[in-house]
Amino acid sequence: MDLVIRHGTLVTASDTVTADLGIRAGKIAQVGGALPKAKRELDAAGMLVMPGAIDVHTHMEMPFMGTSTADDFLTGTRAAAAGGVTCLIDFAIQPPQTSLLKTLEIWKQKAEGKATIDYSFHLALTHWDDTIPQQVKTLIELGFPSLKVFMAYKGALMLEDAGLLQLLQTSRELGALVMVHAENGDAIFTLQQQALARNETSPRYHALTRPRIAEGEATARAIALAEIAGAPLYVVHVSCQEAMDAIAAARRRKVPIYGESCPQYLGAISVDNYERPDFEGAKFVCSPPLREPDQAKQLWSGLAGNLLQVVSSDHCPFRMEQKRAGFNDFTLIPNGVPGIETLVPLVWTLGVEAGHISSNRFVDLISTRPARLFGLAPRKGSLTVGADADIMIFDPQREVTLHHTGLHQNLDYTPYEGFRVTGYPATTLSRGDIVWHEGEITAAAGRGELVQRKSFSGD
Ligand code: URP
Ligand code: ZN
Ligand code: ZN
Image (cartoon, rainbow, N blue to C red; front, top):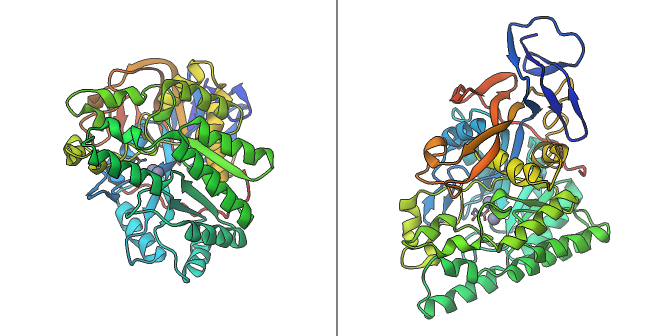
């Protein structure tokens, strides 16, 4: 063996056992039983050994709202490694007059030579044309079987329902999974214009012009279109009861609808932060917006009860000087919060420590289920022999107060400043290589590989 992890408690989506784990040539080679001394050994006594997190919702070096996200594939994946994330799927967003295949090439260039962990892309469609079905077919053949549509961001990324429906029909035929950002873009645009006309310009109006019902309506509409097409659908960043109600009703009808939430909606921060003075509320501007504290409780109930299947970060970082573009007009504040490095400790603290979910459900939500839904299993998302040795050794006792200075994201703040987490990744392995250990990132730029994914085949 190249590396053996000894005395750890192995936690998977289904089991918890105390066993040693051996790694050879980047793969998990043996779980349990007698393992001879290896070239390198890690003592995981008192630690949990889990599959690394798979973050299926990130925005690295993404042009958006007149600027570009502050992490590229180097800084973003270094932060990921430090946070126990061993694979990510980033959104490659189609610029105007650009084909999906060309968009893929643009995003491949961004990642190549930089990524420190494995990665893939979802292609995000911003217009529909008759060449899309053939392009989707090629994308699936190339190992990119998921596509995204924004129902919000009118005048920029938003796609009309006709485009969404045709994409769903195409995906049903070809075996792709369509993802939606579900908020009613027309309603939000109208509310924003009305607010600005009343001279309501501060960050608090971001939330007031994106009401929960705008998310609930769009979620129900996207589900209706998926049902018309007979296609599965994945709803990203679910933030409220109204959206969950639509998903629950569909799942009761046995419609294959899947949902994701993100740590920013799960209890550490809430809508109240938009009231902070001195434009500090801008740090929390993301879409959907932060909601009332009671919504987090509902989301945890959805995550525990399998109404929602995934927690991802929606890592979309902007520095304060970028946020200041919206100082006089909240609609110009770049939408997005950082989160790839804090995903694991926050979900553990808010979910497992708080008693909402078990450690096994935690693994399912952050690794096993996203691997299955997005065609990474059985290569990733489990601790089975033959799988990539993408592993997080997690110290459930370690208490950390989050400060941006202690994080590796390319940012001058974290929305979780001062929040205390219990449980933190001690060591991260990517294909058997130690990429984070004892507070040091040890991953070389460019070692991350582009992973070919399988077509959608359920969860
Ligand atoms: O505010 C957010 N979530 N920004 C990133 C783009 C998106 O909507 O996912
Ligand atoms: Zn979105
Ligand atoms: Zn996003």
